[in-house]
Amino acid sequence: MSLALQTFSTVKDANAALQAAGTRYLGGGTLVIRAANEGDVSVSSLVRVTDPGLSRIAVSGGKVQLGASVTMAAIARHPELVALAPAARAVGGPAIRNMATVGGNLFAPAPYGDFAVALLALDATVVTEDGELPIETFLAGRDVGRAIVTGVGFALPKAESFRFLKVSRVKPKGVSVLSIAALLELAADGTVSSARIALGCMADRPIRATPAEKALLGCKLTPREIAPALAAAGEGIAPITDPIASAWYRAEVLPVHLGRLLLG
Amino acid sequence: MAKVPVEFTLNGLETAEFVESGTTLLNALRDKIGDTSPKGGCHQGTCGACSVIIDGELRLSCLTLAETCGGADIKTTAGLAEGGVLHPLQRAFLDAFATQCGFCTPGMIMAAKVLLDRTPNPSREDVVEALSGNICRCTGYEPIIQAVLTAARANSQNAA
Image (tube, rainbow over all chains, first blue to last red; front, side, top):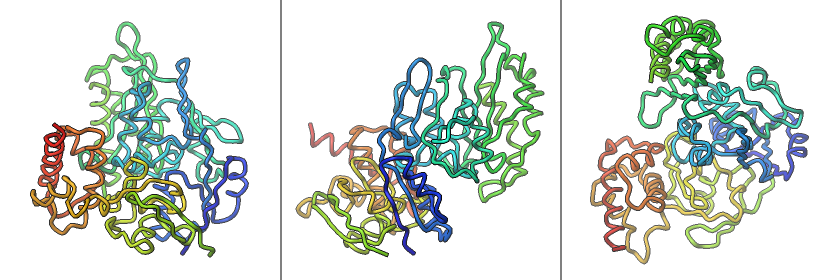
């Protein structure tokens, strides 16, 4: 079966074409061409946008704007995005990272979408032609939204306040058993003053670990003080089952890896 | 379905072909242009057997549409040997028994070439990372890693 590809110079025109049934947006191709190769007959037509602005990375005044077509490789090598490099490098192998985009990662179903887990912890804003959405709102409605994502924005985290961990069975590159991103602010006395933790593979899309975040407030990052947060990590999760791991296994090991991330 | 023209440079040669819209670069190279060095393994972006170099970057030809490659500079393993003399990576893969069934080899060599083009003297960890998107079911990887390290040494000796 052949796929009709339409190329546009503006997002506006592509958004109009995307409303047709069976039409999907082509970014790096690692999701939609994969689906087509697998025989997904719901994809009959593709649209893409050549606007170079979609590949722009802008860092200024502590704010980061990533165009939707920015690749994982571009993030991993950007000198001002060192804090995000581990999350970008967690995606695929070198060839995939040269293709996979920020925009696509927001739509990648678990066990994929490790970079979106990082963006959720960073409280990113997702930009479309319709306006800006908090990433949590975006992720909740991503299956029904039809507007092309043009970029994401977030405050650049200090390297020491942002932590990312991906667990996979194959090193150095493998599919996620789970991934965790945490944005932690510590007070002068070493206690946690704010915490935002995002989990991958604990649902069909990235989710917040809100009970664990609350339990961490006021705690020092010691094994004893974080124990309540680790106990709360499993509240509200519905891990996926796939050939990599069962839901049961993922739920069992989540507190172990969250503990390592917090204490590491 | 209307056919679309694609033009790019393949291993230094201007190449033009008509393909059906939606044809992957892998299928265009193998079935239309006749370069069968990239292999179709998983068609899912998992195995790396279809790896080619597009504008200096490693890409998966199974997930790239041919019609998005207009004007690109594409390199495959078929273009490495010069005048019947194997590229140092090809020589090293043969000498180190880094090829058994051979299906992963062209992808491995493309991934290794990108590494050596940027990092002439890679560490073992660099090699492992560079090959991490390429699956081999025969060799256990060690001969491949050794072949890439050997080719890097051969390159640096030639350059000296």
